[in-house]
Length: 245
Image (cartoon, rainbow, N blue to C red):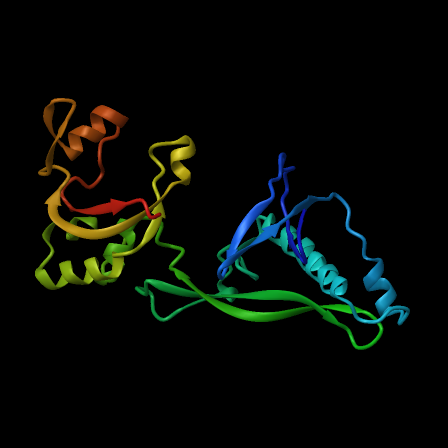
């Protein structure tokens, strides 16, 4: 845990050599000191609840700490996905998920958010409120699935992407542009790099050629030669990707 003035940052690993930094603030700078701690004293909060001490800034530090403890336990749980202070179930329980229709690109998941509040005048209470989040349809696991659903086709109808008309091409391009996702075939740390789709091309992996190691090669042959992967859909349009900052 790092105490930064009246703020608190939480870490599951110890951070060594914590620096003192200067933060710009108007025409001057503000010095920020970091203090490492493994324990947190809740005496101020206890005394305040017992009416033995008046309100003080330290009380809000205590509440922040307790909120962080609860949030950390939920964030590390495999049962929930964390979106800020909101938490949504990771399973596909139909009671928690709703769709506009079967071909919808989006789904609505019911979750909750939590916060610690005063529980009347004698203690604290955890306030858990129901909330709804919008997600990509969890049954669409690849960019191909999303492209097919956006033109009303089934997930097993990938051949339809090889003969798109102009309207279908525009719909897919509009729906998938800006989509962020992970690439799994490179393994290791590369799997954690986020990529973003920028534009849809009319070229295919079988037809698109580029220079690699002094020779001209198609995208499909490059994947076979470099990753020993034979592309499942070499005749559908390619998407241009970038790694967002």
